[in-house]
Image 1 (cartoon, rainbow, N blue to C red):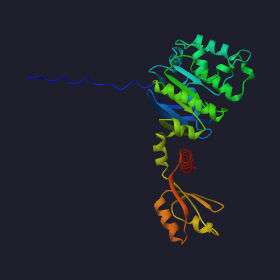
Image 2 (cartoon, one colour):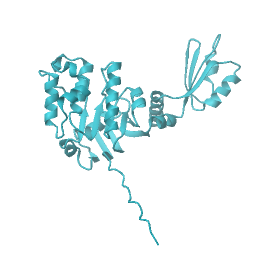
Image 3 (cartoon, rainbow, N blue to C red):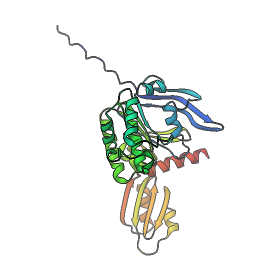
Image 4 (cartoon, rainbow, N blue to C red):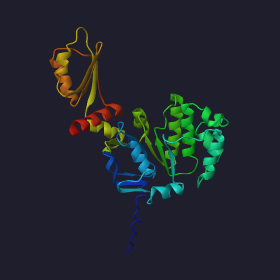
Length: 312
Protein backbone atom coordinates (compact mmCIF):
# COMPACT_ATOMS: atom_id res chain seq x y z
CA UNK A 1 0.00 0.00 0.00
CA UNK A 2 1.43 3.33 -1.06
CA UNK A 3 0.91 6.35 1.10
CA UNK A 4 1.18 9.93 -0.02
CA UNK A 5 3.00 12.29 2.27
CA UNK A 6 0.98 15.24 3.44
CA UNK A 7 2.13 18.54 2.03
CA UNK A 8 4.23 20.59 4.43
CA UNK A 9 2.28 23.04 6.52
CA UNK A 10 2.59 26.62 5.43
CA UNK A 11 3.15 29.30 7.99
CA UNK A 12 1.82 32.82 7.70
CA UNK A 13 4.50 35.45 7.24
CA UNK A 14 5.49 37.24 10.41
CA UNK A 15 3.75 40.58 10.95
CA UNK A 16 5.56 43.75 10.01
CA UNK A 17 4.32 45.76 13.00
CA UNK A 18 2.07 45.34 15.97
CA UNK A 19 0.46 47.58 18.59
CA UNK A 20 -0.79 45.77 21.68
CA UNK A 21 -3.04 47.85 23.95
CA UNK A 22 -0.87 50.94 23.45
CA UNK A 23 -1.70 54.13 25.35
CA UNK A 24 -0.01 57.52 25.20
CA UNK A 25 -1.13 60.59 27.12
CA UNK A 26 -0.09 64.24 27.20
CA UNK A 27 -1.30 65.68 30.48
CA UNK A 28 -5.06 65.15 30.51
CA UNK A 29 -5.21 64.32 26.78
CA UNK A 30 -5.14 60.65 25.82
CA UNK A 31 -3.72 60.83 22.29
CA UNK A 32 -3.63 57.03 21.84
CA UNK A 33 -6.06 54.97 23.87
CA UNK A 34 -5.60 51.19 24.10
CA UNK A 35 -4.67 50.85 20.43
CA UNK A 36 -4.18 47.34 19.06
CA UNK A 37 -3.48 46.61 15.38
CA UNK A 38 -1.20 44.55 13.14
CA UNK A 39 0.43 45.38 9.79
CA UNK A 40 1.28 42.60 7.35
CA UNK A 41 3.89 42.27 4.58
CA UNK A 42 2.99 43.80 1.22
CA UNK A 43 0.03 45.86 2.44
CA UNK A 44 -0.64 49.45 1.46
CA UNK A 45 -2.42 50.91 4.48
CA UNK A 46 -4.05 54.33 4.86
CA UNK A 47 -4.28 55.87 8.31
CA UNK A 48 -7.22 58.27 8.54
CA UNK A 49 -8.72 60.36 11.28
CA UNK A 50 -9.88 63.90 12.05
CA UNK A 51 -7.46 66.39 13.55
CA UNK A 52 -6.56 65.25 17.05
CA UNK A 53 -7.39 61.60 16.32
CA UNK A 54 -3.88 60.45 17.23
CA UNK A 55 -2.43 59.76 13.78
CA UNK A 56 0.86 61.59 14.27
CA UNK A 57 1.35 60.16 17.76
CA UNK A 58 0.68 56.67 16.40
CA UNK A 59 3.38 57.14 13.75
CA UNK A 60 5.79 58.56 16.34
CA UNK A 61 5.22 55.48 18.54
CA UNK A 62 5.68 53.16 15.57
CA UNK A 63 9.01 54.80 14.73
CA UNK A 64 10.27 54.88 18.31
CA UNK A 65 10.24 58.69 18.42
CA UNK A 66 7.99 58.43 21.47
CA UNK A 67 7.53 55.67 24.03
CA UNK A 68 4.09 54.39 25.06
CA UNK A 69 2.85 54.91 28.60
CA UNK A 70 1.55 51.35 28.51
CA UNK A 71 1.31 48.51 26.01
CA UNK A 72 3.93 47.43 23.49
CA UNK A 73 4.95 48.37 19.95
CA UNK A 74 6.91 45.86 17.88
CA UNK A 75 8.49 46.17 14.45
CA UNK A 76 9.63 42.98 12.70
CA UNK A 77 9.54 41.18 16.04
CA UNK A 78 11.83 43.64 17.79
CA UNK A 79 11.81 47.20 19.12
CA UNK A 80 11.21 50.12 16.74
CA UNK A 81 14.70 51.46 17.46
CA UNK A 82 16.36 48.15 16.56
CA UNK A 83 14.31 47.78 13.36
CA UNK A 84 15.20 51.29 12.23
CA UNK A 85 18.89 50.88 13.12
CA UNK A 86 19.09 47.82 10.89
CA UNK A 87 17.53 49.72 7.98
CA UNK A 88 14.19 47.92 7.81
CA UNK A 89 12.14 51.14 7.98
CA UNK A 90 12.12 54.28 5.85
CA UNK A 91 10.07 57.27 7.00
CA UNK A 92 8.80 60.52 5.52
CA UNK A 93 7.51 62.79 8.28
CA UNK A 94 6.05 66.30 8.38
CA UNK A 95 8.04 67.22 11.47
CA UNK A 96 11.76 67.98 11.41
CA UNK A 97 13.61 70.23 8.98
CA UNK A 98 16.03 69.39 6.21
CA UNK A 99 19.64 70.53 5.96
CA UNK A 100 19.35 73.73 3.95
CA UNK A 101 22.79 74.88 2.79
CA UNK A 102 23.40 71.73 0.72
CA UNK A 103 22.21 70.59 -2.67
CA UNK A 104 19.52 67.98 -3.16
CA UNK A 105 22.09 65.55 -4.55
CA UNK A 106 24.40 66.03 -1.56
CA UNK A 107 21.56 65.38 0.87
CA UNK A 108 20.42 62.25 -0.95
CA UNK A 109 23.99 60.89 -1.19
CA UNK A 110 24.36 61.43 2.57
CA UNK A 111 21.13 59.51 3.26
CA UNK A 112 22.25 56.66 1.03
CA UNK A 113 25.65 56.49 2.72
CA UNK A 114 24.03 56.19 6.16
CA UNK A 115 21.59 53.39 5.21
CA UNK A 116 22.66 49.81 6.00
CA UNK A 117 21.28 48.64 2.63
CA UNK A 118 21.68 51.70 0.38
CA UNK A 119 20.40 52.26 -3.13
CA UNK A 120 22.42 54.20 -5.68
CA UNK A 121 21.87 57.93 -5.21
CA UNK A 122 21.14 58.40 -8.93
CA UNK A 123 18.38 55.79 -8.75
CA UNK A 124 16.88 57.40 -5.64
CA UNK A 125 16.84 60.82 -7.32
CA UNK A 126 15.17 59.38 -10.42
CA UNK A 127 12.56 57.43 -8.44
CA UNK A 128 11.57 60.57 -6.55
CA UNK A 129 11.43 62.63 -9.74
CA UNK A 130 14.05 65.13 -8.57
CA UNK A 131 16.99 64.47 -10.89
CA UNK A 132 16.43 67.81 -12.61
CA UNK A 133 16.74 69.72 -9.33
CA UNK A 134 19.66 67.67 -7.97
CA UNK A 135 22.04 70.64 -8.05
CA UNK A 136 19.61 73.07 -6.40
CA UNK A 137 20.05 74.12 -2.77
CA UNK A 138 17.44 72.64 -0.45
CA UNK A 139 16.44 76.09 0.84
CA UNK A 140 15.49 77.13 -2.72
CA UNK A 141 12.84 74.42 -3.21
CA UNK A 142 9.09 74.76 -3.43
CA UNK A 143 6.82 72.95 -0.97
CA UNK A 144 6.08 70.15 -3.42
CA UNK A 145 9.76 69.71 -4.24
CA UNK A 146 10.62 69.51 -0.54
CA UNK A 147 8.06 66.71 -0.20
CA UNK A 148 9.71 64.78 -3.02
CA UNK A 149 13.10 65.21 -1.38
CA UNK A 150 11.65 63.86 1.87
CA UNK A 151 10.37 60.87 -0.09
CA UNK A 152 13.82 60.33 -1.59
CA UNK A 153 15.35 60.25 1.89
CA UNK A 154 12.71 57.73 3.02
CA UNK A 155 13.58 55.41 0.13
CA UNK A 156 17.37 55.85 0.17
CA UNK A 157 17.80 52.18 1.08
CA UNK A 158 16.14 48.81 0.72
CA UNK A 159 13.64 49.08 3.59
CA UNK A 160 10.77 46.65 4.20
CA UNK A 161 8.37 49.23 5.66
CA UNK A 162 7.84 52.76 4.34
CA UNK A 163 5.98 55.18 6.62
CA UNK A 164 4.59 58.38 5.08
CA UNK A 165 2.95 61.25 6.97
CA UNK A 166 0.84 63.45 4.65
CA UNK A 167 3.24 62.67 1.78
CA UNK A 168 1.62 64.63 -1.06
CA UNK A 169 0.95 67.91 0.76
CA UNK A 170 2.07 70.74 -1.52
CA UNK A 171 2.36 68.57 -4.63
CA UNK A 172 0.43 69.40 -7.78
CA UNK A 173 -1.83 66.84 -9.41
CA UNK A 174 0.84 65.53 -11.81
CA UNK A 175 3.40 65.12 -9.03
CA UNK A 176 0.86 63.35 -6.82
CA UNK A 177 0.02 60.88 -9.58
CA UNK A 178 3.69 60.18 -10.22
CA UNK A 179 4.32 59.78 -6.49
CA UNK A 180 1.59 57.17 -6.05
CA UNK A 181 2.69 55.29 -9.15
CA UNK A 182 6.10 54.97 -7.49
CA UNK A 183 4.53 53.81 -4.23
CA UNK A 184 2.55 51.13 -6.08
CA UNK A 185 5.85 49.85 -7.44
CA UNK A 186 7.22 49.70 -3.89
CA UNK A 187 4.22 47.69 -2.72
CA UNK A 188 4.40 45.40 -5.75
CA UNK A 189 7.95 44.56 -4.69
CA UNK A 190 6.63 43.27 -1.36
CA UNK A 191 7.20 46.32 0.82
CA UNK A 192 4.59 47.48 3.32
CA UNK A 193 3.48 51.07 2.89
CA UNK A 194 1.70 52.95 5.69
CA UNK A 195 0.55 56.49 4.98
CA UNK A 196 -1.46 59.08 6.87
CA UNK A 197 -3.40 61.48 4.68
CA UNK A 198 -6.15 64.09 4.60
CA UNK A 199 -6.71 63.37 0.89
CA UNK A 200 -9.35 60.68 1.26
CA UNK A 201 -9.56 60.14 -2.50
CA UNK A 202 -5.95 58.94 -2.30
CA UNK A 203 -6.82 56.44 0.40
CA UNK A 204 -9.78 55.24 -1.65
CA UNK A 205 -7.70 54.78 -4.79
CA UNK A 206 -4.42 53.51 -3.32
CA UNK A 207 -4.93 51.64 -0.06
CA UNK A 208 -5.55 47.90 0.27
CA UNK A 209 -6.62 48.58 3.84
CA UNK A 210 -7.96 51.62 5.69
CA UNK A 211 -7.54 52.31 9.41
CA UNK A 212 -9.77 55.03 10.91
CA UNK A 213 -8.66 56.53 14.22
CA UNK A 214 -10.95 58.56 16.47
CA UNK A 215 -9.80 60.00 19.79
CA UNK A 216 -6.89 57.60 19.85
CA UNK A 217 -8.98 54.49 19.29
CA UNK A 218 -9.32 52.28 16.21
CA UNK A 219 -12.81 53.08 14.94
CA UNK A 220 -12.71 51.06 11.71
CA UNK A 221 -10.34 48.63 9.97
CA UNK A 222 -11.03 47.19 6.53
CA UNK A 223 -10.91 47.78 2.81
CA UNK A 224 -12.24 51.08 1.48
CA UNK A 225 -15.32 49.20 0.24
CA UNK A 226 -15.90 47.72 3.70
CA UNK A 227 -15.56 51.12 5.35
CA UNK A 228 -18.11 52.57 2.95
CA UNK A 229 -20.51 49.68 3.58
CA UNK A 230 -20.12 50.07 7.33
CA UNK A 231 -21.27 53.68 7.14
CA UNK A 232 -24.60 52.29 5.98
CA UNK A 233 -25.91 55.36 4.18
CA UNK A 234 -26.35 55.84 0.44
CA UNK A 235 -26.43 58.97 -1.67
CA UNK A 236 -29.60 60.01 -3.51
CA UNK A 237 -29.56 62.89 -6.00
CA UNK A 238 -32.31 64.19 -8.29
CA UNK A 239 -33.69 67.32 -9.94
CA UNK A 240 -37.14 68.84 -9.38
CA UNK A 241 -39.02 71.35 -11.51
CA UNK A 242 -40.83 74.34 -10.08
CA UNK A 243 -40.97 75.33 -6.42
CA UNK A 244 -39.35 72.84 -4.04
CA UNK A 245 -41.06 72.10 -0.72
CA UNK A 246 -37.96 71.67 1.45
CA UNK A 247 -40.04 71.02 4.58
CA UNK A 248 -41.74 68.03 2.96
CA UNK A 249 -38.46 66.67 1.61
CA UNK A 250 -36.75 67.07 4.98
CA UNK A 251 -39.48 64.85 6.45
CA UNK A 252 -38.59 61.88 4.24
CA UNK A 253 -37.73 58.77 6.27
CA UNK A 254 -34.18 57.56 7.00
CA UNK A 255 -32.46 60.83 6.05
CA UNK A 256 -29.05 61.44 7.58
CA UNK A 257 -28.34 64.63 5.60
CA UNK A 258 -30.24 66.88 3.21
CA UNK A 259 -29.20 69.64 0.80
CA UNK A 260 -30.93 71.68 -1.91
CA UNK A 261 -28.89 73.59 -4.48
CA UNK A 262 -31.00 75.32 -7.13
CA UNK A 263 -33.27 72.60 -8.53
CA UNK A 264 -30.99 69.76 -7.42
CA UNK A 265 -31.65 67.82 -4.21
CA UNK A 266 -28.95 65.69 -2.55
CA UNK A 267 -29.78 63.32 0.27
CA UNK A 268 -27.97 60.74 2.36
CA UNK A 269 -30.23 57.95 3.53
CA UNK A 270 -29.73 54.84 5.65
CA UNK A 271 -32.52 53.10 3.68
CA UNK A 272 -32.47 54.43 0.12
CA UNK A 273 -35.32 52.21 -1.09
CA UNK A 274 -37.69 53.46 1.62
CA UNK A 275 -36.65 57.07 1.06
CA UNK A 276 -37.22 56.93 -2.71
CA UNK A 277 -40.59 55.18 -2.18
CA UNK A 278 -41.65 57.95 0.21
CA UNK A 279 -40.40 60.55 -2.26
CA UNK A 280 -42.83 59.35 -4.91
CA UNK A 281 -45.49 59.25 -2.21
CA UNK A 282 -45.18 63.03 -1.90
CA UNK A 283 -46.54 63.32 -5.43
CA UNK A 284 -43.33 64.76 -6.86
CA UNK A 285 -41.55 63.42 -9.90
CA UNK A 286 -37.76 63.43 -9.60
CA UNK A 287 -35.71 63.69 -12.77
CA UNK A 288 -32.16 62.34 -13.26
CA UNK A 289 -32.56 60.20 -10.14
CA UNK A 290 -29.28 58.66 -8.97
CA UNK A 291 -28.74 56.31 -6.04
CA UNK A 292 -25.17 55.36 -5.14
CA UNK A 293 -23.04 54.26 -2.23
CA UNK A 294 -21.10 56.79 -0.22
CA UNK A 295 -17.61 57.73 -1.25
CA UNK A 296 -14.89 57.12 1.30
CA UNK A 297 -14.92 60.77 2.35
CA UNK A 298 -18.67 60.76 3.05
CA UNK A 299 -18.38 57.41 4.83
CA UNK A 300 -15.52 58.74 6.95
CA UNK A 301 -17.56 61.79 7.95
CA UNK A 302 -20.61 59.63 8.74
CA UNK A 303 -18.62 57.21 10.90
CA UNK A 304 -16.79 59.88 12.89
CA UNK A 305 -19.96 61.96 13.33
CA UNK A 306 -21.81 58.92 14.65
CA UNK A 307 -18.97 58.22 17.09
CA UNK A 308 -18.97 61.82 18.28
CA UNK A 309 -22.74 61.61 18.86
CA UNK A 310 -22.29 58.47 20.98
CA UNK A 311 -19.59 60.09 23.12
CA UNK A 312 -21.31 63.45 23.60
